[in-house]
Image (cartoon, rainbow, N blue to C red; front, top):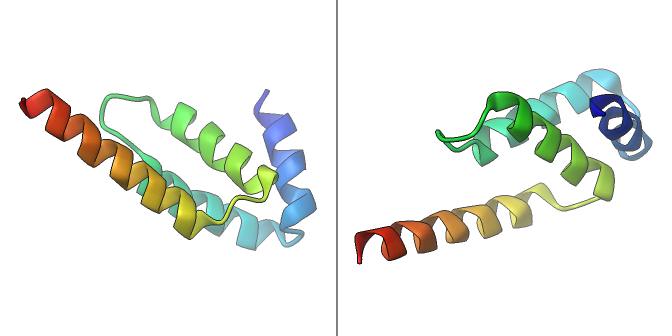
Length: 74
């Protein structure tokens, strides 16, 4: 399963070292404590493969986390 995400991501970022670095940064930014790290890495690779802008993705994720915190606190 993950190999499909990796191959899709390598079409967007041809340099494998840069891809590893981007996936690492993305996974650290997107990771939530309640999820497994492998799920977060898969999500990062899917986003890279889809051509999503990492800065927009992180902004959307942080907004969703803030919204969850507000709902949980109410």
